[in-house]
Length: 194
Image 1 (cartoon, helix red, strand yellow):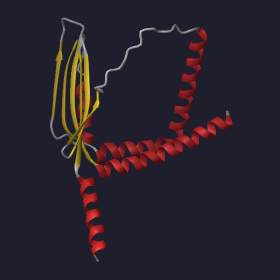
Image 2 (tube, rainbow, N blue to C red; image 1 turned 120 degrees about the vertical axis):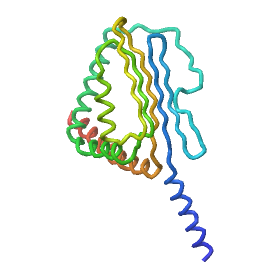
Image 3 (cartoon, rainbow, N blue to C red; image 1 turned 45 degrees about the vertical axis):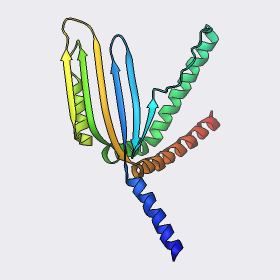
Image 4 (tube, rainbow, N blue to C red; image 1 turned 180 degrees about the horizontal axis):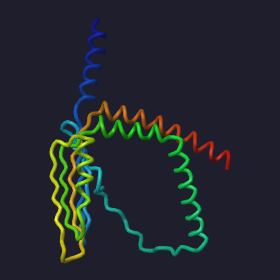
């Protein structure tokens, strides 16, 4: 009987952990001088900084010149990838759209969306935010669009806080594995047929 209580307690703890909300904070700013961005994931009392990576990357000083053969090889590789993407999209359109619909309509809530932009042309951003609001039910959002008629410039900042829970992430993972397996099957078939 004690084993049953222990098993039930473990299952209850696992279910509780799956229902704790997780937040993903996306920040991006761009102007003519610099670009900044960060991705932070918060789960319960834990906080993980995903991007930018704090490790210092070594810069490569010697750059090799590409030859014509390498350029032709890159072009043929790109054409092969485009062909593969077209084939996969044709055969998996329904599965991919179902996965995206589940993510957009069920799994992710946008808790906060702040967009600020200064640009020298029209305001197309209102339409995009309106579409997001209709599909995902934004809880808190702020859009600031300023037109600069004197300068050709683009300054922009985006702050987005997404919320989901681990149960949705697991469901998305299983659906994604299903799509990836189908993609691998299509890729094998394409390689066999040439």
